[in-house]
Amino acid sequence: MPEKTPLYERHVKAGARTVDFGGWDMPLHYGSQIDEHQVVRESAGIFDVSHMTIVDVIGAGAKEYLQKLLANDVAKLDVSGKGLYSCMLNESGGVIDDLIVYWCGAGNYRVVINAATRVQDLDWMTAVAGTCTSTVEVRERADLMMLAIQGPKATAFAAPLLPAVLRQAAVDQAPFNSVSDGEWFVARTGYTGEDGWEIILDTDAGCRLWDDALAAGIRPCGLGARDTLRLEAGLALYGQDMDQQVSPLVSALGWTVAWEPVERAFIGRAALEQQREQGPETKLVGLILEDRGIMRHGQRVFAGSGDGMVTSGGFSPTMQRSIALARIPTDAVGTCQVQIRKDKRNARIVRPPFVRHGRILVDS
Amino acid sequence: MSEVPGNLKYSEEHEWVRLEDDGSVVIGITDHAQEALGELVYVEQPDEGADLAKGDACIVIESVKAASDVYAPISGKLVATNEALADEPELVNQGPYEDGWLVRIDPKDPAELDELMDADAYGQFIAESAG
Image 1 (cartoon, each protein chain N blue to C red):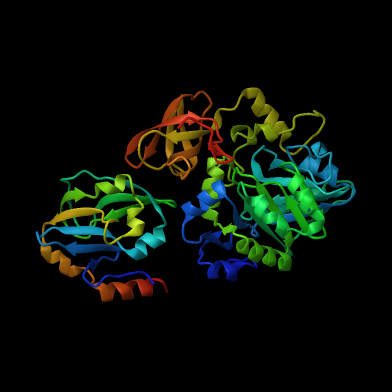
Image 2 (spheres, rainbow over the protein chains, first blue to last red):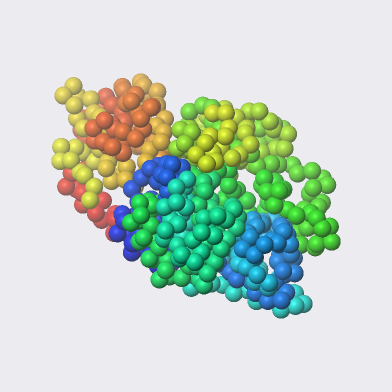
């Protein structure tokens, strides 16, 4: 039996068609995936993302532990509440998961990881904690839920629904920061390319916030719209655009690897340094289909000196054509061809994102 | 509950078939099928004049989720496609039995129509497949 979030009954009542995602029965859409996509680009939508795994990392050794565990460096978190996007690597430099880590004060971090990778992540995090000399505890917070309120009007619509004590701070905070009070945790992050908040809170408060948000005119949105929004925003999806077999350097995530200071021996560093020295053979790029059709995950791409693969593809509601992320040979530039059923179709290679803050950023 | 008009024939692949006065048949996907597929974003127009055997893929439709083949529920020559779908694939979602029709076939053997389900049988078929 797939797991259900505390909002499951509300989703069904709101007309959700649900889908199994990472072992969770989650809303795919509530009638129209395309309308939900548009509402997030133009106004405000709310996503139940309670399937995601929240882990608190606590103890005197927490910082040292995360500096070993993560390819990005938590030393960059110099202000309490600040967040950092990072990959967690295996010894070969392959991506075990991508995550956001927040600093919540001395010896106290919060990490948000993917649902589909929960078991392998927790096993890995616990095993690495066992190798640390100072105290660190890896504590899953299955008691909490998570909502994403996204769109240009998201914070304006949702601000009155927050506890008064952190309302103004939540509105004023810069992207990738968070404020908290008790179990309320409000971060200015998201997976849509729009402004908004990801809010972690206990189940009672979460169900109330969901009801209040809908009453305030924020529209419920499913994972279908979440996927097309993140694809337009050029944001990688774990398991599709990267996995344990590939490194951040070939996944357009080189910017998340903190090479300095050189003494920081994070897991996977040696493998990444070797790959950097040799020069990666592939890269992750954006594609815009010039011919008719829809690009899909797994399709073969003919580009540069060899071939590659569409890692994420679909129809962009904002651009009204097919876009994709693809892993192709490093030397490929300009145009390429994508095998769609029996035909090779022309596509243009671009640098993502395709769309941010409601605007198309590539020549379409 | 999805709509199942009484005057049509249905296949187990969730296509409907309507016999026209001129002896040709019009084919589309059912309301149940369009709802399961999700919003259509692309219809790959096939070549007119193709000779199709029953069960051949005759047109590809793509939704927000995936690409799907639609199989000819009857043998014959493909004589027309719904050109409006090139710019408005959403017509299939909005009116699967009307403006969202897919192709028109000149049947080779009209007796094949009798092998398809009527509305009652199809209604029961989707109720059973829903478990």
